[in-house]
Amino acid sequence: MFRRLPQYKIHLIDKYPFHTLKTQLHEAAVHKRGVTIDIGRIIRSQRIAFHLGSATAIDLREKTILIGDQPIQFQFLVVALGSQTNFHNITGLEQHALTLQSASDAEKIYQHISVMCAKASSEPDPIARARLLRFAVGGGGLSGIELAGELVDHISQSVSDYHLSANDPEVIVVEAENDILPASGTELREQVKRRLIEKGVRLLPRTRVVEVSSAGVTLSTGEVLRAGTLIWTGGIRVADVAKESGFSIGQSGRIVVNEYLQSATQPSVYAIGDNALAINPETGNPVPAAAQFALQQGRLVADNIHSAVLGKPQRRYVPKVWGEVVSLGRHLAVAWVALPILRKLAFVGFIASLLKAAIAEKHIILLKKESRNWISY
Image (cartoon, rainbow, N blue to C red; front, top):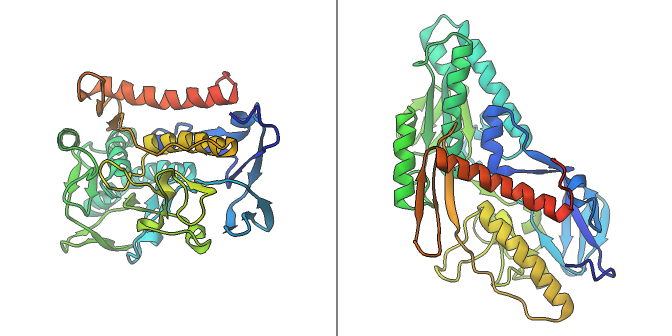
């Protein structure tokens, strides 16, 4: 939309030279599939200047963003810092847990699972072997649940490769809320629970991780999980630079925005995605940190900045829920989609997994469209 306004230049800043498909990280962690696309391929047909680095400070008064020691002036700024893992000050958690926030995290998990199975194959002590093959997932939100479902399939294959018993591995999900998938509807949640239990996943709702050490994972119930692996997906927080730069900050460190997704502190600055505390005007509740909402916010903010440049009114943000898909492993998913006539149409099994794949492919197609690059990424 800025192609006809050559006097404006768009700058893109990122600490990585690639775009990560974060909704597919759980698959990368168990299937070693590629989940990154070079940013250069996305922007090569666009008038966009790319800066490799992290924003270390944002001066809202002077309208300057600092990348390392390089200042860049801006007229409009979109803050899309994403999120970081929130360890909630739990003793030993950061030191002993794996996380799933990046492609490198997924690679570590993939390698770690193979190492645990390899070690277990030569461990004569059944108690020690059980510990090596016990995998705990901290956090029963979408990321944790999808990872748990994929873990079962990958671990089953790994124990078969190393001639271990299929009954040895154990996958456990620990969730502090009353149930898993607390942001999802009851029907979808119950379907997911049933499918996970059928796959042998042990679910521990209303249970918090209170301490982690080399000896195991101590739970709020007093139980100590003698698990060789803990993968933490139990919360996110926004980078400290947002608070340090003087933004109005809400829960989880997210930037408070108005109905146009403008920062409450500076109207020429917008925030989208995980780091934005956007409010659904229909419910009064914060919009969940989910990909479908981040994409909607990105499109709206681009339109609103274009409107601001042309002196036109901006549009309010009203999130649209198109549906929800929870993948639970190979050829298995639970989903629902919103249709114009029916309120909801539910899918379970292979059809739902195809829907998940189609959503991922649509995102890549949109990137190709914007970059005018239809050659495979």
